[in-house]
Image (tube, rainbow, N blue to C red; front, side, top):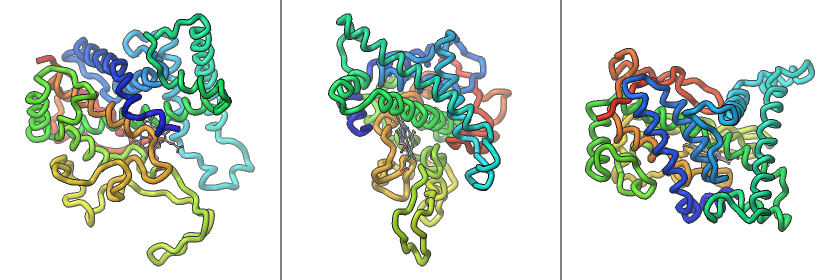
Length: 368
Ligand code: HEM
């Protein structure tokens, strides 16, 4: 499903909608000039709108006005991510399942139901617009249009559409924004080297102070290396998605029994000193002239997973992350909150549904 939805052609067709959202993010930061902001939070709200514009050609949250509807949507997605990320003791001690729920399921069900209802409202709204002969978006076809066509030919039902949207928002927002946040943290920790080099490339290829467009990414090899290096050290889904073994397997002298749950530790593969030189050090240059890519064919770097379960949003993520990150670097100088020194940026991790920074990165943009 996803591979048909996020083809290059389809993403090209609505890239102007995403571009508008990145422009708004930069405008927002310009207004905050001199004031420290939570970079991950701003990137999260922008990622929500980048995704909702890709799917429905519509903003789902208003990060800058705090409107009630906008807040409701972003809070629902955020709360679902928080609940899904909490360890459920019953997974480790199945006996607890008989004793009673931990509260997570109840809250989660409530949030999910509200979000599904909201998606249902959007489906109704689009049907109504179509009935009135007005798509409300200058005739361009988006993912919702395609799915409604499939709905009318019974290839998909309404519940499946709602659940697909749920999957996309839950899987696609925090992963994207946390990558932007980690990348910024790594860059701001290395102002004399990596930041200088990234700014120089952007200055030369795009021009100082300009916002990056998706079409520019292929001309920014160093920026792409920064993104890969960030995903190597900080894969947002460090254990990928759990698998279950269908048959007993012999692997490296071990027997993996049928039905075992298998977690793949992409985090530790990315830091394996047998594969990576100076494996714990952030060195984007290692990817210059290196054939290793993140698309799931090189097992030494699998932040998006591999095989049939591979991330469906990879083509979109590899547009959103460099565009947001490149624009943040190219449009501002950054001052860490509280005047802390670059080498003191803390890099502690917190494990939820994604591997987030324990302490959010806060820095003040300053216009040139
Ligand atoms: C930097 C950003 C992202 C990273 C690192 C990432 C990573 C991953 C990983 C590791 C998986 C599991 C793959 C496996 O187990 O083999 C996954 C699954 C998935 N991702 Fe992403 N993802 C990102 C962004 C996105 C975006 C933007 C979307 C959609 C808009 C998306 C949608 C999905 C979906 C639908 C799945 C399948 C979930 C399932 O199997 O239940 N992801 N992603």
